[in-house]
Length: 329
Image 1 (cartoon, helix red, strand yellow):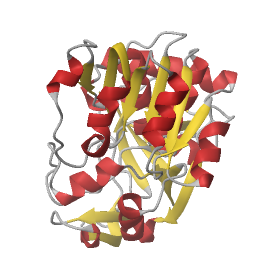
Image 2: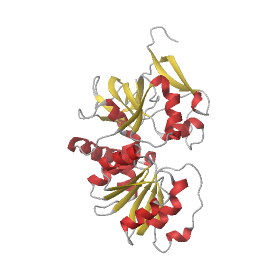
Image 3: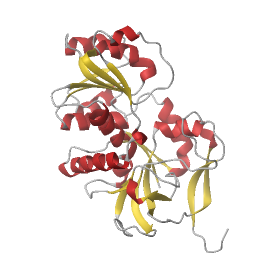
Image 4: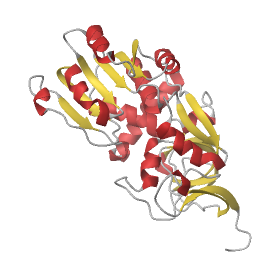
C-alpha cells in the first residue's frame, strides 16, 4: 500500500454466505474519485433486504469478491473527480448507488446517481431515500400507472419501501390501505398516509380487507412478500387491477384463472431497471415532495458500522419492520 494513503473503516465481504461473512476492517484505503465521480464522507447508509440477498450469493447480480455492501448513503462531498460540475466539496448529498460500497466511512459514486439533500432532512433520513423511495415511486407511478381516486393496498407497509409507498400514494390522491404485523407498525402506517391499516398476522385479515373495499376490490396491490400473499392478492383485485411485486423470498403456487375474469396483471418491479432519464424524473418528483413536506423518511433500527452483522440478521428475522434500518458512521 502506498505511503500516505488515507485509511478508513469499512465492511468487506470475501465470500458469499450468511451475515457472518460481513467483516469489519479498519485499514481499507479511501477510494479516489475518477472522471464523473464524487467521494462522499458517509454519515449514514441504508440497510436494504436486497443487501442480504446479494451477500448470500442468491441475487441475480453478483459483485466481484471482495466487495463492500450498501448502495444508499447520505453524507457530505469530500472530493470530486474530473468533469464534475454539479457538486463541490462540502455539499450535502444522498445517492441511489455507490461504486465502492456504502458500508464504509467514505464511498465513491457516479455523479449522475447523486442528488442534493435538502436541509429539511438529516443524514439518517437521507440514507433512507434511495432504494425505498425510488422503488416505491417506480412501482406506483411507472409500473402501476396509479391515478388519483384509485385504491392501493401496501402489503407490508411498515418497512422502508412500504412507508415510502404510503406517503407517495397519499400525496398523489389514492385511497391507501396498508398491512403491518404489530400495533406499533400499524400506528406508524396510519401516521404516514394510510387511511386504513390491517394486521396481517390475524387469521381473517383478508376478510376484513374485503369487507372494507366491498365488491369492487382494490385497484393496485404493492406486494413485499409475494411468496406468501400473491394468491390472496389476486382475489382482492378489482377488474383491471394489478399486483406490483416488489419483494419475494421464494416460489408460490397460484391459479392463473384468478387473473382471467378480472383481466388483472402481475407486474414485477426492480428499481435498477430504471433508465438514467427515469431516475432523473423520479428524483425531481421526490425532491419536490421533500420541499413540500409530504416526503419524510421514518427511521427504524440504527446500528454502528461494526454491528452490520446484527443488522443483516435483524432485517430478515425481525418480528415486524417499523421504519428504515440504517448504519451510522
